[in-house]
Amino acid sequence: MSSDDTLLKADERHMLDHSILVRHRLEEQYENLEHQYHAATTAMWVFLATEVMFFGAIFLALAVYHHMYTDAFEKGSEKLEWIIGGTNTIVLLLSSFTIVLAVHYSKLGANKQTAWFLATTAALGLLFLVFKGIEYYLDYKEFLIPGWRFNPQEWVDKEHLSPDQVPHVQLFLVFYWVMTLIHALHVTLGIVAVLIVMTLAFRRHFSPVYYTPVEVLALYWHFVDIVWIFLLPMLYLQGTHTHIGF
Image (cartoon, rainbow, N blue to C red):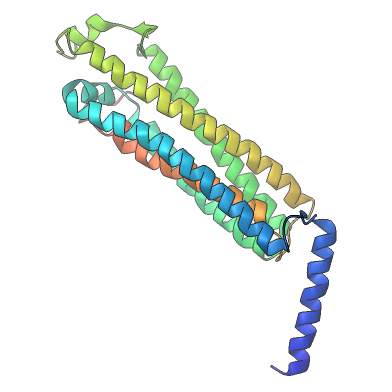
């Protein structure tokens, strides 16, 4: 490559950076867009670290109580709709793939492709919530809501648990509802964020020197996927699942 070519590309780069700076405000505390990008990604990593500590504490408590009340927890797990849980895992993994493609195209400045892959990610997130809603309805019909719609005697008569073990089943179901509802809330917030960033992409907001919102959003979305990957075995796959609840 000749020195003239290098200078030309440097000039082109400068002009591109300038145009992007005009379109995307550089906050005064940053020297350039690169510093602004690193600050945004670092902030997201700090936020995710707090989320890891939050979910980690719940996962640890679940593991401890599972060790203490193994039979009751596995009986409770067998009642969950593991096929829906497995299907939702596939849905979220597909959404992770589509948001990776959105990041890829945003780095190329291909806003149209970025927007469509973000739209696909949001659609898969909605599909996850629809399946989860169906599962919650089946849980309601099966009397799997502790403290409200729960039949203790059924666990003694049909599942052959002792009356002392039945409260432990309710404890497992408390973990199930709390953890899945919190996760569903994270998915819902993620979908809203995806739709906002998708709108920016349709407005040609991103370029090879400015794609920070897409990348930061992808970090959040991958975290939501990873949490579900841990929820699947710890909630749905503890028991033998000789009964399929469809």
